[in-house]
Image (cartoon, rainbow, N blue to C red; front, side, top):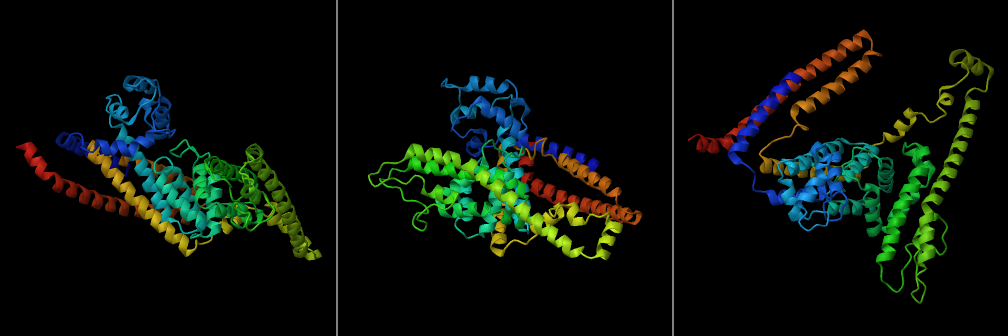
Length: 474
């Protein structure tokens, strides 16, 4: 398979060279710049700095930009002398021979990742799988398309999706906040929660309230030990959004989010809603409110820590009562000692094993969630296809070295080999033989499918390009 993929890559490169000589550089340069400028603008300030280029080098594996070249290019094309590049100046930079086809490399990497996420969303059936895939989508599009982020934030906050699913997304945003593989330096959680709070403040607070319930974490299959950190993070995102709204408002009186239904603040979430209310004469208690808002994330963390401790204590007591019920007789005690060394399976895992968490997570998503996932998967796949076509029209190249067919096949073969090696340690001889047979059958059928796809694709491209080939030959 690896040898075939390498041969296929050689054919692809030859084809790319022919197409490049026939077409030259594409005429969609301005479109490509519009599509990639905000990917280069990592800091999202509307201009491109040398630090932005270095971040792009890290995010999109453009090694040429990782060193001093970024500083040199910015200095070379900075006609205004402000140390940053406008869109017109950026157009000059991307045509520098030191970084050929940089726009297509960046956009193709983005499109390839978008297609992968679209596939993950389409394949997801369980609620936690859909939530995780949606967070991966957020982490990607936050680097490029805030309009789409707004659409999805609205869906999460307008109650068209189950509230538990929205809470799961908030948890996954927290747990993946430090993901090194995301294609953005910005906090996806802050962006998404900020947008949710802007359009649906009350519903966002109610989803956060669900996160404060340790029993909910346990029921959803999450590790309750992660609750304090996530409560601090998500509360911090909400309070920042709240402060931003207070700074932007110019009303003579700010109406509390929860004041109409809750006369007095009974929880930290209700306090978030009440903070920022102006007095009758329009004087905003800004200093006191900001201090209180700044303190809320730490307060939420401490409350969550107390809730987790209480939950684990109650769970331990339930396990002890259950243990006494199961092993209360002399016979059961003897069997426990003889067969299990005096320690039950539940006691050895403290009632919170990974298997137990996985069982709780393995719940099918509700129909409205699956419908949302199908829409999002189709949108991601079609957008990725459009962006890949833009890259080909611009560069006349169907791939880069990073996403070549051979590279992907080698990665797949390496993962399969690792899986086989792991299974060899535990499988019986009959199981190993069956596994080898299944993999060989998969490889044979996979090769046939690849050949059919390649033949169809090559014939399609050649038929479309034959008139230009004849003109070039004659």
